[in-house]
Image (cartoon, rainbow, N blue to C red; front, side, top):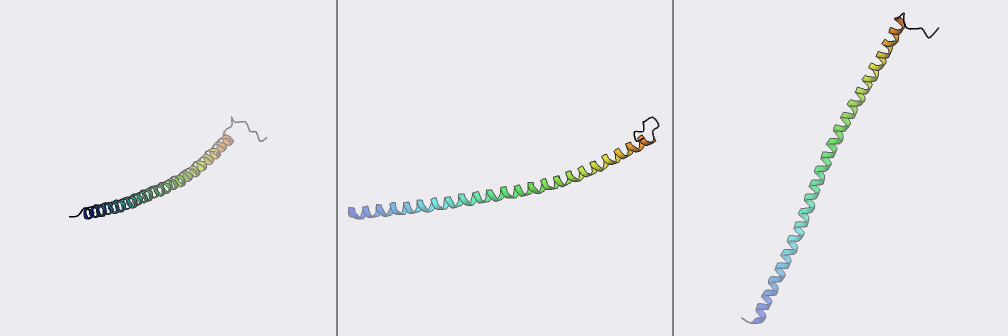
Length: 94
């Protein structure tokens, strides 16, 4: 075979290898981006679940705070009634 034919074959092989390398590199980049998108979606879902749980705990805490406030008011009312009934407590209204 002639030398120019071998040179032409070598150039063709190099061009094919470069094209394959570029295709693999582009495909790898796309897979990397898709993986990052998937990871971001998982993080978003986890954040939304945490936000929901935090909202539920906040609502429960507000309810509990309201109950505690009502109990405190009832205790203060009972204390006032006990002071009204107790003959040893000085009457400050007179």
